[in-house]
Structures are given as C-alpha cells and as structure tokens.
Length: 209
Image (cartoon, rainbow, N blue to C red; front, side, top):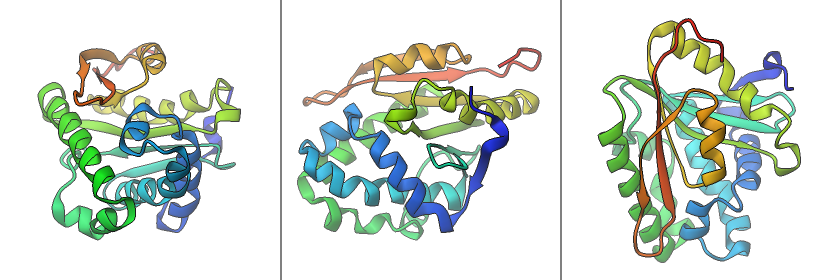
C-alpha cells in the first residue's frame, strides 16, 4: 500500500514530468482513443494535450503526485470547476488546434461539451472536481490511486464538500464506489464516442476512507 506521506503538490515546474506520466497512463483511455484514434499519434500528442490540463490544474486548482512520479491527480476547487476562456488561454490551450489538428479537435470539443453537460446537471453548486487521475500501468493495483485520493477525500469530508468526477472506463466505477462515489448518470456520447459515467461523492465526516 502506497504511503500518503510520499505525495507532493506539483507546481508549474513539474508540468512536463506529470504530463509525461499521465500521458503514459492514459494511452488506452476510451475518451482519448476516441479523440485521437491512431496510437502513434496518441504517444506523440498526449504529453502536450495532458500538459495543458496539468498546467491548468497548477494555476487554478491543485495537482498532487507521488514523489516517484508514478501517479498524479488534478483537482479543481469550488468556483473553478469549469474551464473558462481566459483561464484556458493562460494555460496555453489556445494552441490545441495547431497541435492536434481539426479532426481531433472536433472530437475533443464534442467530448468536452458532453462531459460539461453532465457536470452541470449532476454536481452540486459547491464541490471539488477530480479532473484527472492516473497511475503508471506497471504500478497499478499497488495502492497508488488510493493514496492519491485519500488526503483530498479526507479534506472534503472535513470541509463538508462533495466530490465529482467522470470516467469512461467501466472498471474504474467500482474503484471509485469503494471510496464513496456513486454513479449519478451515465450514457453514450454518440457519434461513436465512449460511454461516460458521472460520479458524485457526498461528504462523510465520520467515515473512514
């Protein structure tokens, strides 16, 4: 079981390292396979694409990683759970069309619009959003994902705040359910897109995580 004392809060100087590990972890993610179907393109593009998410998280949320950089999680706080144009520009997302191409961009926008609708419908007004979490493939099922979640879930319980996430991997649903998240909506994106599960966790002040 991974030790939570091994976690660090990543800053902008760590964006490249965190993005690289998350890019490896998300090579087979259904959303990213839909967005960038060619596996060679995913290897090439995901470090930059996910790097924009990591940079956004460092600027407007909190990013945590293991000290060995085997796993990382991006959280966005109440009031900043939606990506706005000014924040996206500051995070460098304006270059996305040039980096990924228009076909991938259209699929990416469709995916983001779909998940944003779920988010608005299913999340409470004040909540923390788990925007992304990933663990190196060779280090999965060793407690790293749980260690990444534990401190923030304890904090949410202490503050009386809900958590929200969405996932496109059915195998992840039971993992999150064991940590207090419940499926509040699910469905197909359409147009060949993946199935998405929206999950919400109510605070549990007296429960162990």
